[in-house]
Length: 174
Image 1 (cartoon, rainbow, N blue to C red):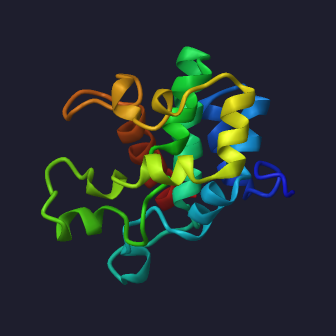
Image 2 (cartoon, rainbow, N blue to C red; image 1 turned 45 degrees about the vertical axis):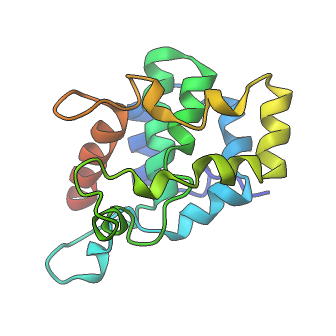
Protein backbone atom coordinates (compact mmCIF):
# COMPACT_ATOMS: atom_id res chain seq x y z
CA UNK A 1 0.00 0.00 0.00
CA UNK A 2 1.41 3.41 -0.92
CA UNK A 3 2.42 5.81 1.76
CA UNK A 4 0.17 8.82 1.26
CA UNK A 5 2.38 11.34 3.06
CA UNK A 6 5.57 10.23 1.32
CA UNK A 7 3.99 10.60 -2.13
CA UNK A 8 2.68 14.12 -1.59
CA UNK A 9 4.15 17.12 -3.35
CA UNK A 10 6.73 18.77 -1.09
CA UNK A 11 4.62 21.92 -0.78
CA UNK A 12 1.68 19.93 0.58
CA UNK A 13 3.99 18.02 2.93
CA UNK A 14 5.29 21.33 4.29
CA UNK A 15 1.77 22.66 4.64
CA UNK A 16 0.61 19.59 6.57
CA UNK A 17 3.52 19.96 8.98
CA UNK A 18 2.38 23.53 9.64
CA UNK A 19 -1.11 22.25 10.47
CA UNK A 20 0.25 19.63 12.87
CA UNK A 21 3.81 18.97 13.90
CA UNK A 22 2.76 15.38 14.57
CA UNK A 23 1.09 13.13 12.01
CA UNK A 24 -0.46 10.24 13.94
CA UNK A 25 0.35 6.76 12.68
CA UNK A 26 -3.26 5.53 12.88
CA UNK A 27 -4.35 8.13 10.32
CA UNK A 28 -2.46 6.51 7.44
CA UNK A 29 -4.42 3.25 7.72
CA UNK A 30 -7.73 5.10 7.39
CA UNK A 31 -6.39 7.32 4.57
CA UNK A 32 -5.34 4.23 2.60
CA UNK A 33 -8.83 2.71 2.51
CA UNK A 34 -10.44 2.61 -0.96
CA UNK A 35 -13.24 4.93 0.17
CA UNK A 36 -10.78 7.63 1.17
CA UNK A 37 -8.46 7.04 -1.79
CA UNK A 38 -11.39 7.73 -4.12
CA UNK A 39 -11.19 11.35 -2.94
CA UNK A 40 -7.63 11.69 -4.28
CA UNK A 41 -9.06 12.08 -7.78
CA UNK A 42 -11.56 14.80 -6.85
CA UNK A 43 -10.31 18.37 -6.93
CA UNK A 44 -11.14 20.45 -3.86
CA UNK A 45 -11.82 23.39 -6.17
CA UNK A 46 -15.53 22.61 -6.79
CA UNK A 47 -14.74 22.61 -10.51
CA UNK A 48 -12.87 25.93 -10.71
CA UNK A 49 -9.75 24.02 -11.74
CA UNK A 50 -11.44 23.67 -15.14
CA UNK A 51 -11.93 27.43 -15.49
CA UNK A 52 -9.62 30.10 -16.89
CA UNK A 53 -10.75 32.44 -14.11
CA UNK A 54 -8.77 30.70 -11.38
CA UNK A 55 -5.13 29.74 -11.33
CA UNK A 56 -4.15 26.77 -9.19
CA UNK A 57 -0.43 26.09 -8.86
CA UNK A 58 -0.83 22.78 -7.06
CA UNK A 59 -3.31 19.91 -7.47
CA UNK A 60 -5.16 19.72 -4.18
CA UNK A 61 -7.65 16.92 -3.80
CA UNK A 62 -10.62 16.41 -1.54
CA UNK A 63 -8.50 13.75 0.16
CA UNK A 64 -5.80 16.35 0.83
CA UNK A 65 -8.44 18.69 2.27
CA UNK A 66 -9.86 15.93 4.48
CA UNK A 67 -6.39 15.06 5.77
CA UNK A 68 -5.75 18.75 6.44
CA UNK A 69 -8.95 19.00 8.47
CA UNK A 70 -7.98 15.88 10.42
CA UNK A 71 -4.52 17.28 11.14
CA UNK A 72 -5.90 20.57 12.46
CA UNK A 73 -8.24 18.66 14.76
CA UNK A 74 -5.43 16.35 15.87
CA UNK A 75 -3.16 19.32 16.59
CA UNK A 76 -5.66 20.85 19.00
CA UNK A 77 -7.33 17.79 20.54
CA UNK A 78 -5.12 14.69 20.18
CA UNK A 79 -8.50 12.91 20.05
CA UNK A 80 -8.75 10.00 17.61
CA UNK A 81 -12.56 10.10 17.26
CA UNK A 82 -12.71 13.81 16.48
CA UNK A 83 -9.76 13.48 14.11
CA UNK A 84 -11.45 10.63 12.23
CA UNK A 85 -14.73 12.55 12.05
CA UNK A 86 -12.76 15.34 10.37
CA UNK A 87 -11.08 12.89 8.01
CA UNK A 88 -14.42 11.33 7.02
CA UNK A 89 -16.35 14.59 6.70
CA UNK A 90 -16.18 14.60 2.87
CA UNK A 91 -16.07 10.82 2.29
CA UNK A 92 -19.32 11.00 0.31
CA UNK A 93 -18.31 14.06 -1.71
CA UNK A 94 -19.07 13.86 -5.44
CA UNK A 95 -17.12 15.52 -8.22
CA UNK A 96 -17.77 19.30 -8.21
CA UNK A 97 -18.36 19.03 -4.45
CA UNK A 98 -20.60 21.74 -3.02
CA UNK A 99 -21.80 22.73 -6.46
CA UNK A 100 -24.04 19.67 -6.11
CA UNK A 101 -25.41 21.10 -2.85
CA UNK A 102 -26.48 24.19 -4.79
CA UNK A 103 -28.20 21.95 -7.37
CA UNK A 104 -29.95 20.17 -4.47
CA UNK A 105 -31.24 23.50 -3.13
CA UNK A 106 -28.92 23.31 -0.12
CA UNK A 107 -26.97 26.47 -0.88
CA UNK A 108 -26.93 27.78 2.70
CA UNK A 109 -25.82 24.78 4.78
CA UNK A 110 -24.17 22.83 1.92
CA UNK A 111 -24.72 19.48 3.62
CA UNK A 112 -26.81 17.51 1.11
CA UNK A 113 -23.69 15.78 -0.23
CA UNK A 114 -23.06 14.34 3.26
CA UNK A 115 -26.18 12.17 3.22
CA UNK A 116 -24.26 9.03 2.24
CA UNK A 117 -21.45 9.38 4.80
CA UNK A 118 -22.76 6.76 7.23
CA UNK A 119 -23.60 4.33 4.43
CA UNK A 120 -20.13 4.61 2.86
CA UNK A 121 -18.41 4.07 6.21
CA UNK A 122 -20.58 1.12 7.26
CA UNK A 123 -20.27 -0.59 3.88
CA UNK A 124 -16.47 -0.40 3.98
CA UNK A 125 -15.02 -3.59 5.41
CA UNK A 126 -11.63 -1.91 5.80
CA UNK A 127 -12.93 1.12 7.70
CA UNK A 128 -15.24 -0.97 9.87
CA UNK A 129 -12.38 -3.36 10.75
CA UNK A 130 -10.18 -0.40 11.74
CA UNK A 131 -12.95 1.19 13.80
CA UNK A 132 -13.61 -2.11 15.57
CA UNK A 133 -9.91 -2.54 16.28
CA UNK A 134 -9.78 0.99 17.71
CA UNK A 135 -12.96 0.55 19.79
CA UNK A 136 -14.79 3.33 17.94
CA UNK A 137 -18.49 3.31 17.08
CA UNK A 138 -19.61 4.57 13.65
CA UNK A 139 -21.81 7.24 15.26
CA UNK A 140 -18.71 8.71 16.90
CA UNK A 141 -17.07 9.48 13.54
CA UNK A 142 -19.77 9.72 10.86
CA UNK A 143 -20.99 13.22 11.73
CA UNK A 144 -18.31 15.85 12.19
CA UNK A 145 -20.98 18.39 13.13
CA UNK A 146 -21.07 16.93 16.66
CA UNK A 147 -17.56 18.28 17.29
CA UNK A 148 -17.37 22.09 17.44
CA UNK A 149 -13.67 22.09 16.55
CA UNK A 150 -14.54 20.31 13.29
CA UNK A 151 -17.63 22.26 12.26
CA UNK A 152 -19.49 25.37 13.37
CA UNK A 153 -22.02 27.49 11.57
CA UNK A 154 -20.51 30.60 9.96
CA UNK A 155 -19.18 32.97 11.06
CA UNK A 156 -17.77 30.84 13.89
CA UNK A 157 -14.42 29.18 13.27
CA UNK A 158 -14.19 25.50 12.38
CA UNK A 159 -11.36 23.26 11.17
CA UNK A 160 -13.14 22.56 7.87
CA UNK A 161 -13.50 26.27 7.02
CA UNK A 162 -10.04 27.10 8.35
CA UNK A 163 -8.40 24.38 6.24
CA UNK A 164 -9.99 25.35 2.97
CA UNK A 165 -9.17 29.01 3.59
CA UNK A 166 -5.51 28.15 4.24
CA UNK A 167 -5.23 25.73 1.33
CA UNK A 168 -6.92 28.11 -1.11
CA UNK A 169 -4.28 30.66 -0.22
CA UNK A 170 -1.26 28.40 -0.50
CA UNK A 171 -2.43 26.88 -3.78
CA UNK A 172 -2.36 30.32 -5.34
CA UNK A 173 1.06 31.25 -3.89
CA UNK A 174 3.18 28.09 -4.23
